[in-house]
Amino acid sequence: MKNLKKTLALLLALCMILALAACGQKAPAEAPAAEPAPAADAAPAADAAPAPQETKWLRMATSFAYPSLDAHKDYYGWYTQIYGMTETLYRIDADMSVSPLLAKDSSVSEDGLTWTFTLSDACFSNGNPVTADMVARNFRRLIEVNERYDDWADFTFKAEDEKTLVITTPDVFPTMLVALTDPEFAVMDLDATTDFDNAPICTGPFVIRSFQPEGDVEVVRNDKYWNGEVKLDGATLFYMPDADSKLLAMQAGEIDCYTSVDAAAKEIYEADPASYNLTVIPGTRMQFYVINQTRLDDSVCAAINLTVDCEAIADYLKGTTSAAVGPFIASAPYGQVTKPAPDPAAAKALLEADGYTLGADGFYEKDGKVLELSIAHYKSRQLPDLALLMKEQLEKIGVKATLVVQEDPDAGYVATGDYDIALYCMIADTGGDPYYCVDALYRQSGKWAKAGFPTDESEALINQLQFETDIDQRAALANRIVQMSIDDNAFGYVGLFNKVSVARPGVTGFSEDIPFDFYGLTPETDIA
Image 1 (cartoon, rainbow, N blue to C red):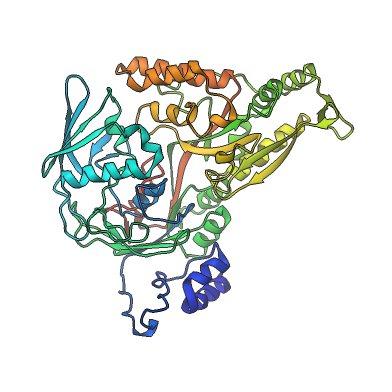
Image 2: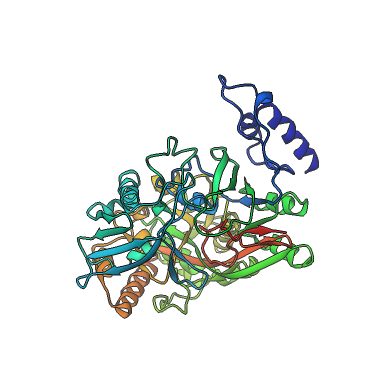
């Protein structure tokens, strides 16, 4: 690790971008990284002003990196929020409640179609005030550039005055406040920002200092932050998708904290409480798989779900996940679903009743062709472990499996539908309501529709859930839809992640107490 650090320091001095391209994933340097390499027509590096000597600098590892800081595009807002750059009108607190942030308060009309928001006295990092007109324009821009918000196209956004925003919806929208906690609803200074991809002007406690697309990021304190004192001078967020790399960097003293600690690292940190503070809280992120019904016989789909043993997988992952039945915690009113217990013998019987026979190599085949399933996954959220465990469980009953790993699942196997089993993680519960997850997983227009599950019946129920205002009825509808996905052998819900974070003594406030993965640096983030 020390040799790697020296190598990186030299490479960074020559050309930071080439170093990142050559090394891909690397160990962080002791000090905050240098500014990005200058353009060809820029002044020589020797003439550049030196970086300030920060006294409180946090080094944090992250599992994902993106090519842009434009919070309205794709899922990039998740990470601009983790970086402490962007904020939304509302946020979700540690107790899963929704509280105002850039908004001060809100009200809704009797018919449920008109929402009125009073904005906080917030400002951007350049000192410009956050106005209702600017918020309205941000929301319109989000709808224009992010297809996931196409269903907001019929909403109207109007500034009644500097601090009063009115949103009118064509239909009752009972989850408005929860929806506005989405990181994509970040508010940026659209007039002053000249480079949304690399240097957006936002409202958060930190501003960008250097950004390496799909690499490391540096932020520094926003000296004009509107909502209290910012305790850190800045932070470096190192892109480290590999769990072992994060563990080694933590042990070497090269990073100060990170979330999504895996099982092996958790055991190591637990054994040394004097050196590491471990925080474990119930999470809302779900590990699941999708079965491609368009490519597999019904008997195979059913056999998969009868074979995958979620309790055994949770035991192997040693406290980082809890076995799941559906996408929500069992204590939630919309988490009341059931699924059959694992039964390998029944799985084999289903295959054999459908004409599959065991070949000489111990694997099932039919019509002279071996039954071989591809398990597509990506290198994060312990999905490599899950993929391997599922492969072992399937092959134990005689179903051959091949692992396929891709760096970008959304642009890869999710988009193409080229898989037999697709592993994925997502936040299932965004704030006490099931609609977000149900809408994301089961819509006929959704990204998983290529696998064959959505039906006219499920689509009608989702539409009903979307506009239902009665809380009990919302739970009942969600339970019915999820149960359909289980009974149809379209999905397998493996585990709900515990959010496991680690930090050095003295590091606090990096959202380790909040169950959601899209929060990170805050004004309260501190290092002793």
